[in-house]
View: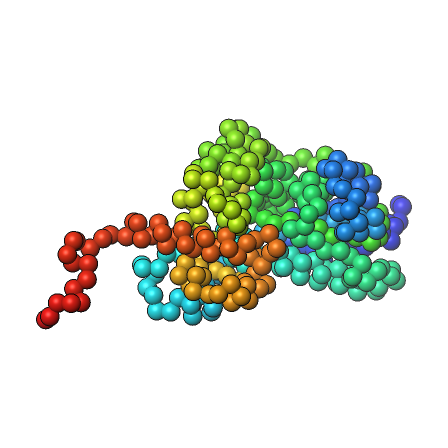
Length: 343
């Protein structure tokens, strides 16, 4: 019987450590498959250099199943909202993945898995590079979906979102993480995710039919960013007229197509205490903050991203109040304010 190579042993250890960290699905590809996918998806040389892909000898791709998150809003929002009752305070919803910083959670778990792998490998007499050499990427500019597919994590649904296939079944309530490994993990073509059989969407069109702005086309598998509600929640531009109503009750993100998916299964036992925002933020609370105070309050959250405009978030809050005031029942004429009348 042929003995496993040191790289294959490290891969086995890493796989078990990733599983111990609670990742829903995981997979590996070698350097050749990794570079081929970068070429097929047109990743430019500058971006490859930025991520140091030339030093990558293997890739691990993971998917983490997120939960609906903590419902309570952060202290800064409570303080800004004051004593305003919820019935007179319009709330801005956050998509489930944005209610806590699940991106940072993936990064944290990847780091713990690498540290544990290094310790366990050392016990077997195998020395591997330090943790800094294992590049952890989450929500990066690399083609994460294509790499996840190459590693056999699942399939892309008709809403163009990864549906991960793991030991607990299938779920579209996942986020992707990548680990660029500095050593050859002894992968062969048969040990990668290529050709791994996974289910598909079949004739299901629930996500396509659920999208109110038709961002997924008629058959799905197509994505028109300019029609996507989530896209406009963080863009500091005047949204199209057909988008504006959908921005009036949300701060960032959109779960409409996901909620329609039969595979949308958040893991309510999963926990993330990093960058917690809760399910919604009061519109007036957000507008009460200055630009600098808002930036400070959002630091470390999913909304603390270069491509998310604070101006867009404030616009959403203003739209929420605008629509709220239009829909709020009006007092009868002559009874709007009786403060000038004597008892």
